[in-house]
Image (cartoon, rainbow, N blue to C red):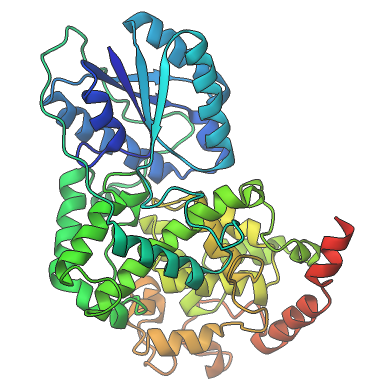
Length: 480
C-alpha cells in the first residue's frame, strides 16, 4: 500500500504526488485536520471551511478511482510524525508521497515526518507541484536568491523558453480496496462556519476552478491589464482561493494563458502576459520564503526597517479593521473583505499603505488581520504584499511613495460604483462627493458615516519623517 498525504493540493488532475503514488501500486489518501496549527497560523474560518468543502468534492472524485480518502486528527504539526507513523503501521504502507510546501514550519514538519517514517522502514517522497520552478533553481549569478522581481522574471522567462513545465496525467482507476473513505467533517472547533452568502461566492471543487479558469482565459484575459485595477469591474480571474488550496495548479493556469496567446509569454496579448507575470509574482514570493526564512518569522525582509517607530494606536487599528476610518475607498474595501473573504488586489495595496503609512501601524497587524479573514490567505503572497506596501520588503515601494487613498479612489473607482456597493449609506452622494464626504462640511446628510480618523497630509509627513530617521542597511549589517 502507498499513501498520498494531501495538503494544499486538493485536486485529482495534474497532481504530481498523486500520480507518482499511483504508479507504485494500490493507493490510499489521507488528510490531516490540525486545528491548533491553523489557529497558530491565523488561518481564516472561511478558508478552513473552503478546504473542508473541497475535500468533500475530492473524496467523491478519488472514489471514482477507488482511492479511499482517510481523515486523521492531530492538534498541531508536532503530533503529525506519530499520527502518520501509526497510520502507516495500520495499513502496512511502504511509501508516503507529498507535494512540497515552503514555509519554515512546513519544511520542519516534513523533515520530522520523513525521519520518523524512514526509521520505521517507510520511504518518504516529495515533489515540486505548487510552483513552476524548484526554489534554489532560479538564482543570481553569485548563487543567491533574487531580491528583485524583474530580474527573477527574466530568468524564469529563459527557463520557460527552454522547457515548459508539463501537466501530469490523471491516474487511472485502481482495483477496489476493502478500505473505505472516512466522512469529511463539516466544521472544525475554533472555526466558525461562514455565512451561506460567502460560501455561495466560492463554490468548491475542481470543476468550478476549471470553469473559472476557462471563462477567464476565453473571455477576460485580454482585458486583464486594462481592467484588473478597477474594483467595480470583473477584471480578475477570481482563482486565488483555488490556487491557495491547490484546487487548480499553476501549470494549469500557465497553459490556459499560453493557449490564448499562441504559446507566447513575452509578446502578443498584453493581458495574457500581465496575468502570467502575476503567476510569477506568486512564484517569486514562495522562493523568498525559502531563500530568506526570516520573513516566515514575522521579521522584516529589510532588517533596517525593524527600527521603525510604529505607533501603538489600538483605536485607529480597530477603526481600520471595522471599516470605519471615514475614508470611503478604505472602508468599502474592508467591508468587501469582511463579507466575502476576499479583497480586490489594487485595494489590498491601498488599505495596506493606509495602515502602515497614514496610520503608521506595524504591517504585522495588517498581515495578521488579512490572514484571519482571507479565503485565499497564503503566507508568501500575503507577507510579500504587506511588506511591499509598508516599504519593508523585497522590491518594495520606495518609502516616499505613499498612495493617497483619495487619488486612488478617484482614479480606480471614478464613479464611486464600488464604494456605493459596499457603503450604501453614501448612495445619495454624487461621483465627486463620494470619495471624500468630509469635504462637504459638517452636516452633509450622511449622519451615520464617520469623519476621517486622520489628516492625510500630516500623516504622510509623519510617515516620511519616521522612515528618514531609520539607520542605513549598511549600519544595521555592521551591528548584526
